[in-house]
Image 1 (cartoon, rainbow, N blue to C red):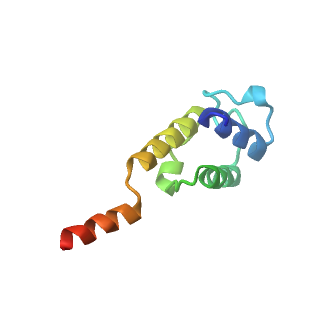
Image 2: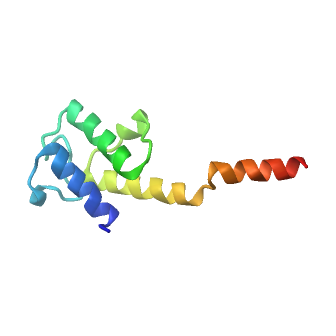
Length: 98
C-alpha cells in the first residue's frame, strides 16, 4: 500500500490536474498549483473520502500547502487509531453501570 504522503500527492495530482513534479511538500495549492476555492473544497472532500476522516472547515482553511495536507492527514489518522471504537466505549459504560 502506498504511503500517506504518496496517496495525498496522488489525490492532489488527480484533483488539480497538475504534473507530479509540481507537487512538492512546499507547494502552495493556490500560488504554485493554481487551485481556486472550488478546487480546494473538492480536494478536501477527496481527502476526507480517501482517508475516512472529517476535516472541519476551520481546519481546512489552514491547509495551504501539500505538506500541510500530509501532516494533517497523518495526525488525523494517528488520532483515529488511538481513539477507542464507539462500540467499545458503550460496552465499558454498560459494564460500569452493573
